[in-house]
Image 1 (tube, one colour):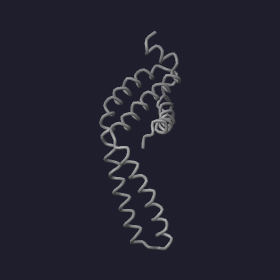
Image 2 (cartoon, rainbow, N blue to C red):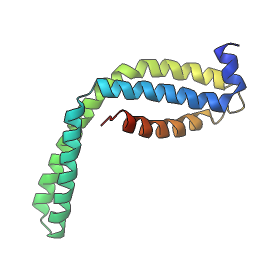
Image 3 (cartoon, rainbow, N blue to C red):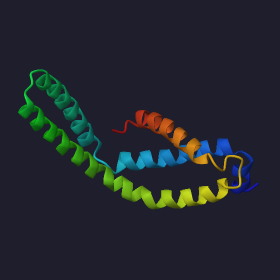
Image 4 (spheres, rainbow, N blue to C red):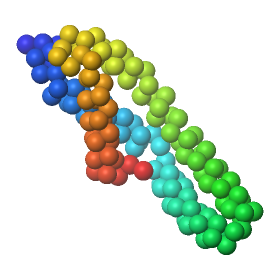
Length: 136
């Protein structure tokens, strides 16, 4: 039995399995191609700044709030830069796999909804794998 026949005979299970494989691949790329320590530092700092913003907003100190929001924006830009490298590395393989998957699932009982099975399972797997692999 070929992979294509196996997928067509069990479309729901196979899309969940494929979702796991792709999500695992992306999570590993994110873990090994980003500076995890720096990302954790930035996120921690942003949480601290959010607390300060709440305090200053209660005191109606708009200038301080704007200054802190600018600092959060700077941190967000740095996080974005860190996420670009893994995105570039994984984009082409993912596009090829999705092109292949789309063709296969068009002949199954979940032809119109396979993408939703993929999205929901990928979100769940991403949360779980990021916790297990300690990815920031």
